[in-house]
Length: 152
Image (cartoon, rainbow, N blue to C red; front, side, top):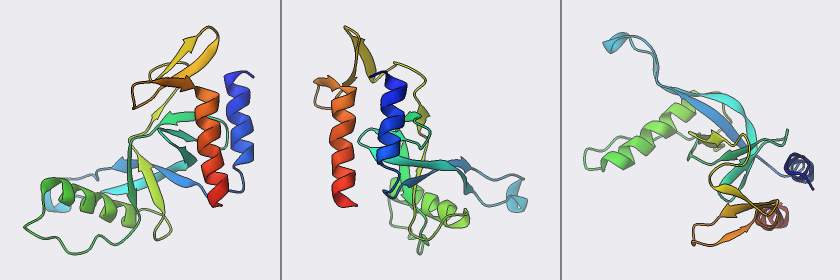
């Protein structure tokens, strides 16, 4: 099966499974105190399949960052910079147009063909795994689909 057909087929299988939001981070505009607050702008929906996101049109993305649309809570001075960044992302997500608790993916990257972490091996699209090995992309995606369908 050709890659575009495979991806559209998997998207059709997942149509009844809850998806996650895709968004673009908007840092706000203006200067100093006249600056608008950062927020996430909706950019679509996709299913998380391991290191990939797949949208309903069969487009594949490499995952990036993730947050939730929840009230961020009180800022504490004793938190690490990374914890404060995550809090800021939650605040930006809460200001966006997302349902409370919605998972939001951002800084994802569209895969416009066979590129890292994908590669061709004798006509088969394969994926480099975090473990250092490789697997056929179809097997990798089908394994992740079975996990999503099992939890739906």
